[in-house]
Length: 350
Ligand SMILES: [Zn+2]
Image 1 (tube, rainbow, N blue to C red):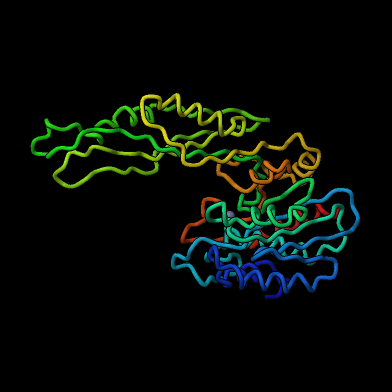
Image 2 (cartoon, rainbow, N blue to C red):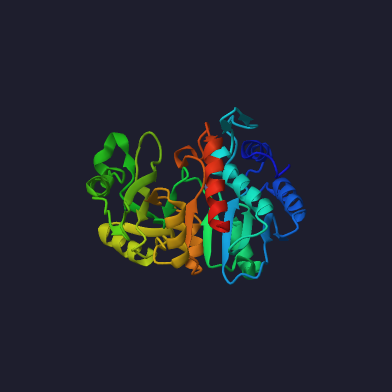
């Protein structure tokens, strides 16, 4: 893999190195080898995450981060390239962002801030495998910075903050009986009616935070119940996902949901906090004004929240349409990768 090539070619090279979560050794080896040849970088490795730092002696440090892993292939590996696009697994999420970050790492030998380039493993799966978690545990100092840019796909605009997420189960109980003699039983699935009514009548809260409108959500995502084709079921559980704006903590969100579903068994499964917009931070203000693209709130949960929890303001900014992330037809415009690269380069050097 040659870093010093045009960004479409570099993105395709990265797409064609298989790196489904937990299988990032090959790509991490190549990234580490390529960055180790760059004179102005000090390269470290934690498991299959590669960290490359400049040490120019500036007082402020910026992290530029991208994950190396992808979701499993879906008839979209290996990838291909046309004159204008790169197509294939991870082209959007997020090998094109990684390509731009790699090229910045190799090209920028003189920047306004010190930079930590972070290429990490296992973003697409459970938190316990996430490369950022591992670095936090094993070498926290490598993540020290004043501002983090996460190059997740945003279609080349700046996405600020992110919404939090809460998953919980609510259940209903009944009494089992033969379905031919149903009057002897009490159907737990039928008892879901009031839960469905709550879900259907839920009015999404749309708070405006620092001028940006977030949009909360409450969606049933799974249902578990039933015994056999001739049995009135005695138990059912529904998994519900609540997305909440960053002005609400996970504990508050849990309280709100417990109140809403107070008549049903409530079981919290997991929760992750959102992230504030960070628009009160001087570096983010400067970045936003100089990059000059549209700004939107981030609805999905990203590792921006992990940085925010560590007290580091962070934003999402990267090439690729987020609607195509994890889609079998991932495709990214080479011009957009170049635009993101150029914007970052001029902000970091001007
Ligand atoms: Zn991603």
